[in-house]
Amino acid sequence: MTNRFVRTASAAAVGVVMLAGCSMPVDSPSESASTPGEAGSAASTPSATPTRTSPPAPVDPIEQYADDRLADMSLRERISSLLMLHYPGTDAAQLRDFAATNDVGGLILMGDNIPEVPSDLATIIPQLSEDAGLPILTAIDQEGGIVRRLRTDEFAAASTLRTAPPEAARDAFHNRADLLAAAGVSVNFGIVADQTPDTSSFIYSRVLGATPQDAAARVAAAVEGERGTVLSTLKHFPGHGASPADSHSSIPSTDLPLADWSTTHAVPFEAGIDAGAELVMFGHLRFTAVDTAPASLSARWHNILRDDLGFDGISITDDMLMLQDSGEPDFADAGLNAITALAAGNTMLLYVLPADAASRGAAPAHLVDVIEAAVGDGRLSEATINDAAHRLLVERRELSGQTTPYEG
Image (tube, rainbow, N blue to C red; front, top):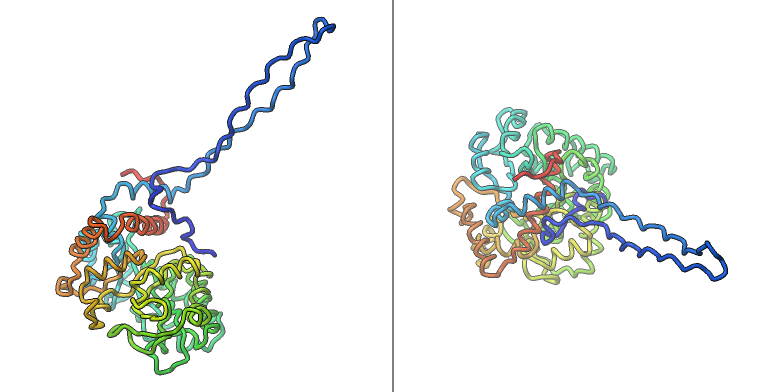
């Protein structure tokens, strides 16, 4: 796998530098006595060759920075870093203040964040991070076609790409990535790895293939096109195409067995992971034969992603407010949803917040409060928080291009 995040380390190893094992010195041999009858001569045991000490294993400066910075962060700071939030408007100072006040790890840019002259976004985004050595992640939904925040994106989208050669997907997403990078965007939530032949499905107009193999080839090509320019995201795991319903207003459900999933909806995600996608977005999708909980809140599905599909990057939820919008009483509490999502294994929680986030029970400070309380009472382990925070520190530090030590 070519994933850029293969260096993820357990937060339990914070601050520890591993050294290669050193051999114990060999005792020096003693001189043997003279042999009788050989006056003036002594037969000595040959000297043993000294064992060389192995040099210290090289220290990865990005990992070391993440270790040191994590150790210097409070629990609240670590929790806050796991949030990717939306704040409306194009005022750079307001956006920066929101990000800094809430210590967030990322901002998602929606249509209301795009200035009248889209190219002006390139002057806004560089102002959003207080620390150039640890930039926040700036993400956008730029699939092309019907889902695009930057309207200047005229590159081919799913409606064309699903019947074009995979190379067309690579070229379209390469150009799309260049457009985003020029605007300062670091993460594209743009590669739909879902697949379905059902034209009545909510997701059909956005899929890159009607069959697992067709989608897989184009998903992998799209990741290749974005590689090295923006961080690629595969969505909506485990596969929105398994149900025709809309996850913005319900929790789509399917009774598809895991064995059948592994030969169908899993295939494009595997291809994208193998191609090097850095993020996977979990959908609020219920596969009842695997887990009755939505995948975004399911530890079982997170284990499948990491253990079976080999993904070692950043997992992020779809907009958490969609759970409340489903109308299901079990998901009416935004704080409880956040705790459950982190306990399941998500690295980041995504919230497309309105201006009055408190009206949804999702004010950033409140979310941090309830998550911190869950750590305090044992419902959520601190190790889980640390692992997620460490993954994000590594990725954000890599984006900075800096390799100097953390100075506190």
